[in-house]
Length: 353
Image 1 (cartoon, one colour):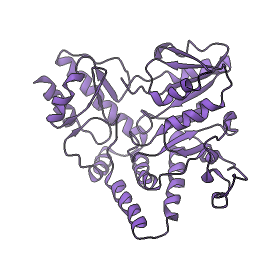
Image 2 (spheres, rainbow, N blue to C red):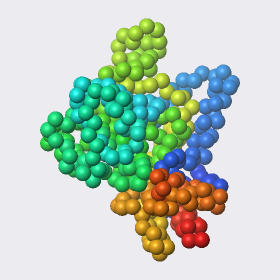
Image 3 (cartoon, rainbow, N blue to C red):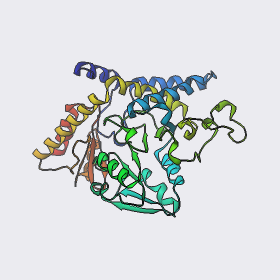
Image 4 (cartoon, rainbow, N blue to C red):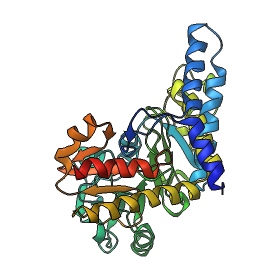
């Protein structure tokens, strides 16, 4: 784990926000090294130089995410969105299969199942999802941390319940990867986008599958899904990749060039240190809210804090240089490694006015 001094010096070297940015749950800030890599990648195209280094960035990102997720790199597919990954999982289910989901979870982890039209979708409150797994449940799909209010799913209880009843599990780590320690090996499938807490550009997402692929068919496979991609450019792919790369989508090369450097930073800082930093700021905000007579929605251990009734103040906060979100009338603030106690105090000052 990095010392506090090293943590702060690394962060100061990478981020120069112009205001008080407390909206990582929507989009993370790009580190300076990432911006540089994006510029260098664009120059490759502009100058007509070979793009092979950009494909090497994709593999470096795959390996870095595998380390963060705690799984072998052979289990990680590189794609573009959680919705696309969810669609592959949804396509694998037989007609009539029951999918258990949480109320008001993020659309990308839900909608592809609904679009099938022939699945039984059962929705329950998040705090009841583990107890709601039953015989006949084929799959449980849930976000590790809820986008709207930051609540963290009891994934250990869900895993145990699913194993008891023979259900598979699908966990969306989009609002967790980068600040909340991950153990993707505990679940059948998991996914995450890269542009939030992983601090990458838009256009990259990862899917973790079992070693035996869990019965998935790579229905979106193109040439990059071949065991020998450059020999798979014409006609049907003769031999799919022997690893999870068979579920890859053609990569947004600039995105992965930048993301490689963002993931490097996360690893240099260490998720444990980022976790402690982020939660300390969230708790500071919760305590400050109490002095103002407000109470956040319950979300123990979360870096996302949602406050009922204050969402309407988002435009006012924006004019004051404080970036937060309005989610269904709730003010949502999300704290990450580039934030400081001064950022929390600035938000509280504006709210107190």
